[in-house]
Image (cartoon, rainbow, N blue to C red; front, side):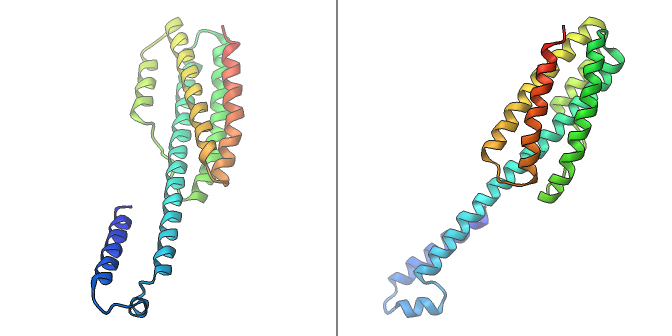
Length: 194
């Protein structure tokens, strides 16, 4: 992006200096490849490239967020299978493991198509939540697991909907569209657990 701006500034400066030189004509500029039409074409190309970079950035953020969400749900739910005291939480935890594993398996080829690597480790904030859950037991674990599930799924749904509003058509947008229904189902399931 910086190289692009420097290039645009340099071309602009050269154009201005050429205009100040006596005897500079359009034909002289054309032989140097600096016609007004070429400048317009270059600007259009730069605008197009900037749009692609923004889209790529949104895609990359989506892949990172989706992977982190899946990993967190799987890891926290593995803990819940061992530590939860309410049977409904254990059933919910198994559903989280199954469905978020499936989501990850669908995300990987979509991300690969876009040339975006899928992170293999949790971000620090989500790892801290896993570590905190490890230190809990009994009803305290149950309450925190439920709270983390609610907040995590609400956050994921908001991020996915935001991504869908700006994403270009393709495998990642298709993945996100599918994920919204699954995340909403998980939130609805949480409401039934007492």
